[in-house]
Image 1 (cartoon, rainbow, N blue to C red):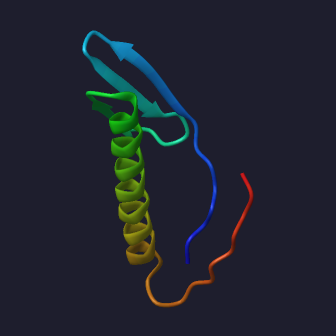
Image 2 (image 1 turned 120 degrees about the vertical axis):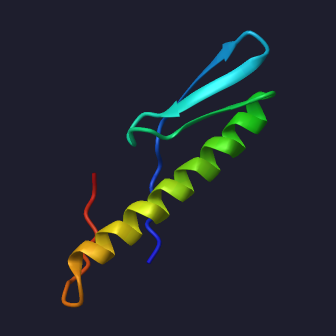
Image 3 (image 1 turned 180 degrees about the vertical axis):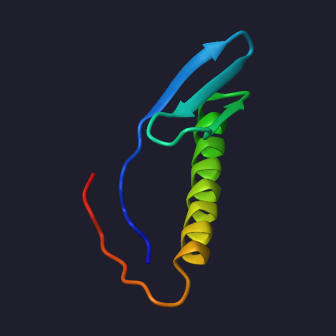
Amino acid sequence: MAINQFCTALIQRDGPWWVGWIEEIPGVNSQGATREELLENLHSALQEALEMNRAEALAAAGEHYVEECIQA
């Protein structure tokens, strides 16, 4: 089940690169040659992190669990 939510991208220019971090998820960061490339890279990094976190949570929960959507 997909959860639609927004995250905050902190971005800055660092010499020839654009670099950025997702504020709400530690470890999700990226860079790009352009601002647009950075945002695409951050989106990909965020999707991968969410998929990995979900897989880990499902593995830890085992067979019997209930999913609940909560608002941040």
